[in-house]
Length: 255
Image (tube, rainbow, N blue to C red; front, top):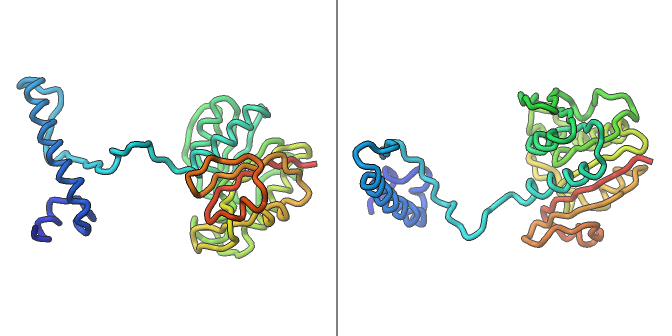
């Protein structure tokens, strides 16, 4: 088939690969069947208009299993289960995924802070602007605190923050400062061989995280492997460091 014709009928950038042609040809066949069936079953007064110009192809959802981002499904689920145990009167979240604060705020009041203000309005949830390297809390004041899949970005400029090679360490220092004695910190970062993938994120070793949070007690760790293996509770240092881009979850308590 002429490339110009393929480019015209296939959604961009599908025409660049002929494998997409198979999926789109099935889409065309199914569209024809659906339109014909709708016309026959609904009669002249169809419940919906079915126009070719209204098409919105979703070509790759027909899979035997539901796909999901392992990092961003498992780590908020891990954290929510801990909050269900600890039942704080107020939880402070610093720049974790919005889905976490949104859902947890249904049963625990949450104050959410982000470098980029999130215009999110839900009962039980307050959204404010905040800088991880200069948190707006007195020392030893926050009883329940989380900062998940966030520290690895600080100082890389990805989200408009200043370039700072030690920005992550400054942010960690702030988390330790504001956490109350006896308070809980839920902390999540990519783990494996230490490296920077500029300007996406940093990846940390198990030993680095334990060192950075010296003075806090590790209550529990949780590893979401970068393979399809099941998550592990309290994995060994050696197991964590086998990862390339695993997700390390750490529950710390301040002495």
